[in-house]
Amino acid sequence: MPTAGHSAYRGRFAPSPTGPLHLGSLLAALASWLEARHAGGRWLLRIEDIDPPREQAGAADAILHCLQRHGLHWDDSVLWQSQRSAAYDSALAALQAGGHLFACACSRRELGPMGDCRRGCRQRGALTPEKPASPYALRVSVPATFSAHWQDTWQGTQDWPLGATLRDFVVRRKDGLYAYQLAVVVDDAAQGITDVVRGADLLDSTPRQRLLQQLLGYASPRYAHIPVLTDSSGQKLSKQNLAPPLEATAPARNLRAALAALGQASPPAHASSVEALLAFALAHWEPAAVPAQPVVSGAATP
Image (tube, rainbow, N blue to C red; front, side, top):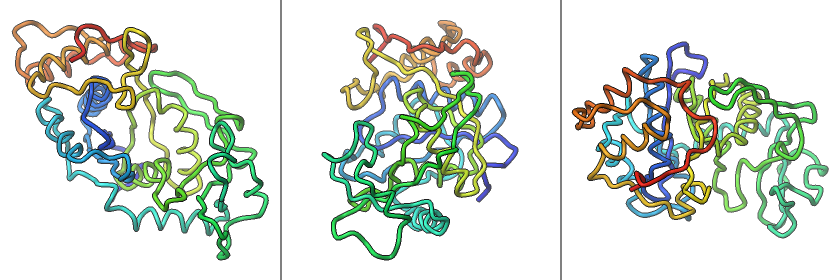
């Protein structure tokens, strides 16, 4: 597979099958699709199904169907994280060989408010073949000198020095499941992703991912974090907050609502089909019009 240093634009949408897509999900998918198509690049789909306890039966198929109903067709085969264990194990082995991992047996009660290890696990040294008696997570040691700097398309200049946001973080959980931060970095590199478009709620994940990219020798993609859609009370629309699912039978209405939330020109009334709406949106795509602040959803929310 190509690496993330590939010159041609390669974007992606990577939902977790923890529930159906909602309007906020469509915002991220649509912005990612428009950026890729506007650049003449490819748009890939990844299903991040590495957390079985949180997954909802049938959600993955529903997501695929919903995207197709909205005309957001992907290039290449869908990548399923549940089939990528060997790649994640290889990355963990590379991190361990570099002395970047340590075993953390802290209980939930012992962890700090940010989920950081507070029992001195790191001070016991890098991971060794001797395993703690109790279940343990694998954490990455964040170098004291590390800081992450990048120019975000919509969030502007980002500067994340070591501090409360960059603590030693988990790459494999106590239950043996791979952590999101590890899987997304490995898969972005494997799929040759050059540009990541996603919600601003994931902005603070980017420094950790850039560190892993550096430690694993991967190129870092460009990042663009769109504003998070909120309800009238300012609460983020999310599956956790029981955001209403998209009505798959009303894709044209959903696309119009998403384009409005992205600050884009309103398609003419005669553009009634999904194909006509997407063609108009692509021809009139204005990234600079995307608002930098959270967008309040109104009556257009299904």
